[in-house]
Image (cartoon, rainbow, N blue to C red; front, side, top):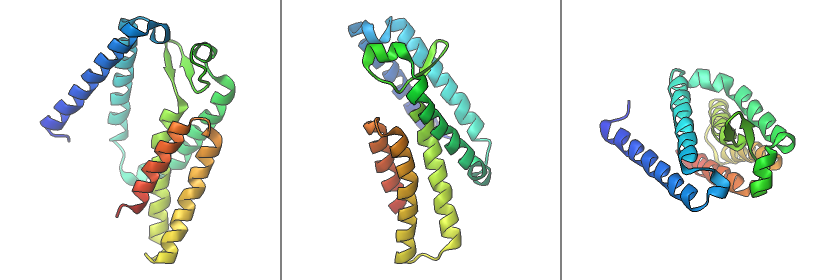
Length: 178
């Protein structure tokens, strides 16, 4: 469980984020709606995220690795679906075709894909390390596997260069971490 100090820091960052959204909405209501609505919607996402985090913490690594391919496949399906089923009003306002709308909530499938991709690559690394000894040749084989998994995501969602870049940086850092 997190310490009291780290919990306080997370709460402080969340409040700073809510304040930032409020200030942004006050200064540019055309994209965010009313400031109160923008802050409330972010608050809803905070609550949903806390619920998901509590749910995921109930599983051990082996259970998560078993479901990793399914979560990854769901992420890929959502990334493909958003190409055709994106929110038209968000597109008209911002030009972004990367958003779904479910009732009053909007979300980007890339936000689901980021943890799914990390989980899937963690499984790939674990399976590789269980099968092969640590040699330079086998480490390059692992890097090749990681690049192949990365190419799938970049190909499907290449238009979102920020997400692709974040995934590439994150994966590079995790690949060389020992």
